[in-house]
Amino acid sequence: MKNDELIVFRREGMYCPLGRFYIDPILPVENAVISHGHADHSRNGHKKILCSNRSEKIIRHRVKFESIQSLNFRKSIRIGDIKLTLYPASHVLGAAQILLEAKGRRWLYTGDFRLAEDSSCDAFEPIKTDVLVMESTFGLPIFRWRNELKVFKEIFQLWENCKQTKMNLVLYCYSLGKSQRILHGIKRYFGTSTFPGSIKVHPSISAINNIYKHHGIDFPDHSTFSPHKEVKDSTLILLPPSVKATKIIGNCKPCIEAVVSGWMAVRGNRRRETGCKGFVLSDHADWNELNRLVELTEPENVITVHGKSNVFRKYIEERGVGTSDLTLANSN
Ligand SMILES: [Zn+2]
Image 1 (cartoon, rainbow, N blue to C red):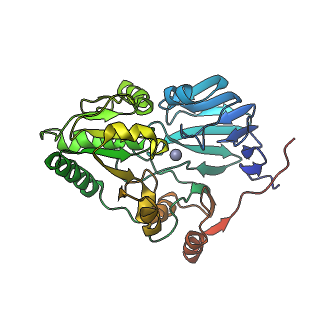
Image 2: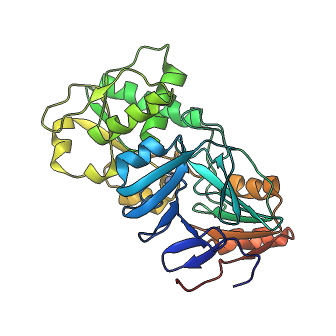
Image 3: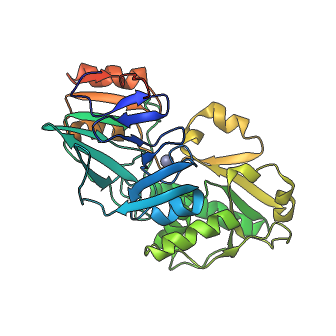
């Protein structure tokens, strides 16, 4: 391990040796800095958690830990020999980029992020860095998102078609982030129109909606879906993907079902969702945004995590920016 490395990889996950803390660790640890509330970044069992104050309520709701400290965006704290600052990453409410500074060097970990404007969460803030540790989940040129308004218009059109045929519209979307983006988008783009029907959301989505509302994100009127009650015609029903093909869908019938996800950009994935439509709407950066981030942050080296795309790395190297992996280090 070289002295100038501010993040290395241990068995427990990404580790900052100078601050003695882990970042989005995979295993339970003493000190964890958590970028956001999604389950693959926020895991149970850590002793102390540090997160953004906009994600504290979400993490408290979803994760078991001993103690939690939250930090405002752009406010720095010192941990050991490290100066740590959180910046908004868009993606979902409270998602943070984590900037580490020590010995005159800057390392920025993006967490999951998006550059495009999304009024359901905090706008991404580009930060110059020496080393950029970034997610590259959609690091292939086939992933290029359309303007979200076009997708929202298609969703609304399908909902109106459901009214004509006296059917409900079920959208499968993650409980944290995607569901709130859809609801907020419906209010933002169609708030002055008459809706084809009422809106119901799964209890897991309802709980997160309340946290978003607390932080000032507004939604159209909606109620909580009860798995034991039949739903009437042309209701828009938001459910997490985990309930797809379970018996609770019986209470939503007759209905049109659609999955809302960036992965719907892949034809093979759409085909696998038999009997389901697909809308391409992602909370992650697409190919253009991944490349744009490298331009905006001007790093000398890029380390990709969460999706290691060799195509993306080659593309970066062709522009004269180095790429590497995190150094593997032993746990103490
Ligand atoms: Zn995420």
